Image (cartoon, rainbow, N blue to C red; front, side, top):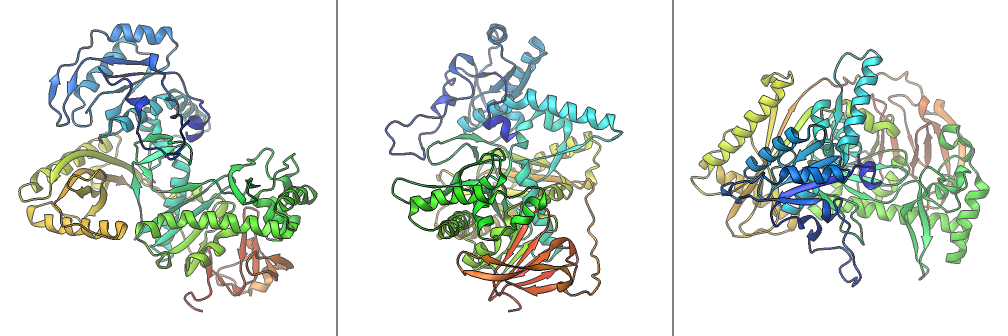
Length: 623
């Protein structure tokens, strides 16, 4: 899904909006990252102006009809869209989050007048305010909808041909799965489903091993992604943007997405030297083709993988699980070019690349922890993806984290996370309410109405109401602030007597994130309801070890450069032969076909009953 958006592989979209607001999509927001660039250009809208059309009609922010909807011009609009080759129609009217009546009428009319076209309206995706964000989300969903529908239809047909007799569930960006039919209607909910499954897996793993507070880090070939999990709960937000970087404001997508930070640092990240002689790593990547220089496929730029190989952290004789012969001559040439620009030796350049990459990842981990009022020392670092275990121990040492856990099958851990997911839907509704006596009844009624809607949807898909679980969150702010802070509301009906309890929870959450609280009235801006139901997940069983010593898995020894700690003679272990109960002390390297675990001097290693690798850092528990 994300690739279809970033590679512009969607369809031509026409937008229908409220009279006078066709340019909301292009006006966007005034804030931008490249603030002092006098030649700054906004990202080009996915729908050009000539395909953005208007209909008369107006609803107020309270949901009251100010002017009735006039659909008399719709047939002509659709005729123009047909002539222009439009394949999908997006509908987004002003304040439809408060009253979707006009959008529903327009949606039904488009389906009646043009049954073949793909069409989606904003209220089907989100019921939160912010006009530009809702319009952008609706357009991006329409942009990928026909492609996603075709793909999912082929998937279902292919599974049926292979004898699969059930409807598959599709992973979503909110750490849950949903039905194929539901996803086909609103495919934008899959935008970050891959990372979401990994972070959900980290939360489930934390519960399994008694570590509910987790910093999760996924390092792949191009990017590193991280998220914070507190008390076993993954935080979900709707403030998500694609293609946002230091020079572009990107495009907002207002759907439930796991709260993550993503940076352009992975195994294929290219090292380069700027005009001032400063070394950088990423965000540009060599990708899979041609890939790092050591792949021997024509790559000439030094990458993080090349540096890891050169320093002995990756086994050149067991590269990619022995499937690729490492081209060390090409790696040396690429690293030598960087070294020459820096005026240092190849070894020092490789160390610098590793240190810069680690520093970039540490900063990303700080964004999801320290910057939001959490002490990393209170969390366990769970690292996965092909590169997670190679850098995790150095990152943990920098942050003061006491323990790192490398899951069994770390390179495919996100797939395990999918298998542990529940059927889940997130409902966001905007509704202003002051937290004062008399307002509780309205808030409770809003939650109850939304819960009834969720139960009806689940029941229509064969899920009994007794299986549905709810979590209630409120989005609060100090009166007249712009943005909100989300707070979990404890179980039980919301009454006036409980408003002070909710307000206290808001003050505490707000102060932890922003370091202060205000003596100001608190208001609710909206609700966030999570509805979930178990649809079957893996049951993990611990296994007993044979009692053999870790030395039985020893492959040999080699010199490894740890960048900061210098060169050490490291013990090399075969990851496929490590058993529960085995333990040893670094310096060491664990190798398996999918990943390499770099264990620094003095770090203590043990294998648990599920095959996960636990690394206690110096000064951690048990030292």
